[in-house]
Length: 155
Image (cartoon, rainbow, N blue to C red):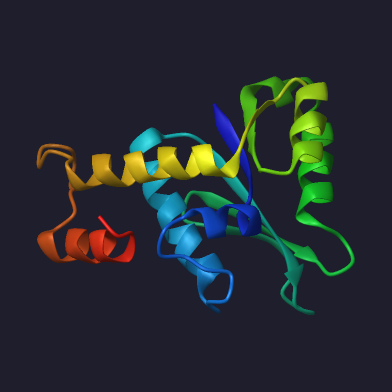
């Protein structure tokens, strides 16, 4: 299953992240990189209110980040992406706590999960990454990195 995520909807649901932090989007992208590495599932995240000159699509590692231009919302962009996916939308999960976005996802046969639920899945992936065995091709976190993640997310 692949994911379309409303980034600004998810950020406040993750312990240690806040929309008031100027680096909130970058921090979320870093966490989604870990999620991808552990779960091997496609991730596209949408951030609205991109400042002039910053709007557009960027590949950040294995995560695709859509910085939505001002005047359009992440919700609208997610629905447009589902329309673009057409029948393949059924293979995607939309992460948003917005009921209208969830309804639009279901109409297009995509799965919809609230941001709170995905935040728990993300936490689980972070714990899994922290406990990866050394034989897993160098994906293991060292003690300093693990300490930083746990400090950041309050575990």
